[in-house]
Length: 115
Length: 112
Image (cartoon, rainbow over all chains, first blue to last red; front, side):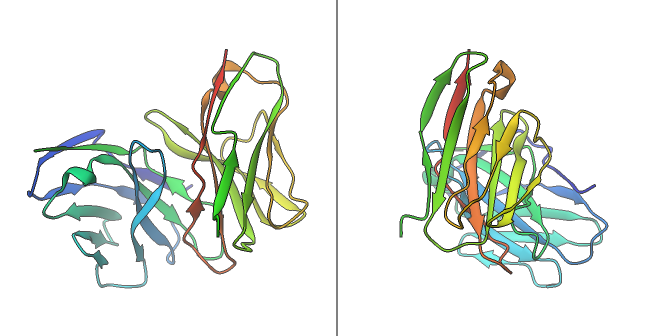
């Protein structure tokens, strides 16, 4: 069975600094997707970034980038130039193409940003 | 587009009561899902549907029923609420061949 693990329940970063959130997963599939979702206090789930497993290049979205290590089954999120608005719960998630509706989530990492 | 909508936003039930959480989407998505979010456990899949008339169980289906009579709607029914069902419930949808899921705003349910 596929599993997703986030081993950091809480992280803290100084405003304007860089922070990395960790995620590991386990799967026997070769073709899959990985995601990072942000959940601010409003509770809304916001997609931050996605990575297709068949792509070797790491995904980047503005200040957010990932370090995807397929062999190690690791998928970390780096937030550069952290802003107060980045404070939220972050979830790592795994899904398989054409099995839409079946995402497996990690436990979440609560990120606080200090001014 | 309203996207994915959920009603109600908050609900308090007594043990044994029944209720239906409503979910609707106006994006013509084939796939719809229900998740529950509990502290320290992330989101866990309850039930999902790949189209009207087709539903299947996820990781934690016990105590919940679903049906999908239209593409737009995917209600979640609690037949006899239990305190263990106190949680935040999210509905999500995605299109066929798509992988990104669009989430509703969530329903916070408390069972006393």
